[in-house]
Image (tube, rainbow, N blue to C red; front, side):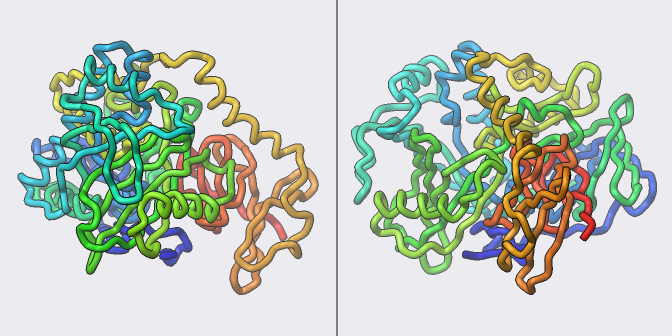
Length: 507
């Protein structure tokens, strides 16, 4: 398994494309821009591209490498086959809004293709068919989905009797034509070149710890640099310093890339209806192709069985793709669901008309991120966008109480960790490379023993709302089971909503 220096699993994209470092910029204590964007994934960079091309003075700030967040952990499907199913979007939002949602994902793929062509980005962009395959344990109704596509789109969806792949008896499935795929980090590298050619500024390794709205929004970094702008776009997966955690449950997802003989499998996208579901694509690699299979999702911090999840993916792959060889890469990532199947994109609220959100990717981050960039840039430029109301961040939840309550319960049950014993009773119980939560009086201590045998102790109280973090042995992180915050071994925050580090615990 490939791992980075930080101990986290590394995706096949990171292994083949160098992430971008931009440490200059924001040196002065106060700077002014037309638009300030926090987050340098596909959402933030696409927004920056559209606005810098429109001659706006734009800055993008990220606390890590450019493209080094969750965008680098995607499997990079470009699809208008909505993850939560079109018939459910129609039930929750109505026919017209469902049509607009499908249209937005279709136009997002078109926009990516347009950018690739106009900026001459060599990123393996390909148009191909996608197939939605039924599973015996599936929770989706493919008949209802087909009927919904006839009312709401996308165009050309049809039944096929089987995928006719060696070893994979898919049975009757739905074909979604004209989908897409690409190498996401090569695409982001092309966006970066274009943004800078249009005068945009990119800053990496600069953590934003606060923002203010109003007529001239401002951000503040951890070294007290302040940047003000006419508009502020929060494109950080979970929106920085917002109170949307009840609407945005966080999930971990897993992916493997197996070696495959060149051109042994035609380029297609596959999604099944299991819960958790699986998703498949291929990618060209040196000397062979890669078969990329993802799935095995679970709520962040509520399971610690990453190796089992990978084993399940391998078994699923071996049963259906006998030509697949050894596993070359394994990695995991984080995505945010919403309670009604659609992302929160565009103007934050009437009370914050100059602040914009791009969040709630719901497993479709590449297209949702692009749709969000299109909506936010249109609103900032004073142009009408027909999708804005559909994705309005201040919209009321349309999902039924019966469907919404389990997610809320899953976010609150982990608070019982405060009244239960710890994982271990003594530091002596820990082996090298292991972490666990230990009770110390009324406190909970996050304890890790490194490969040299040295013990590191942190306060296990999540700095967001006080839930007790849990150890992620795969990624070597401390993950919050309530709202999805994640922390490095030194306590540094990796994923919001938490923005402050875990404090050191006394020895």
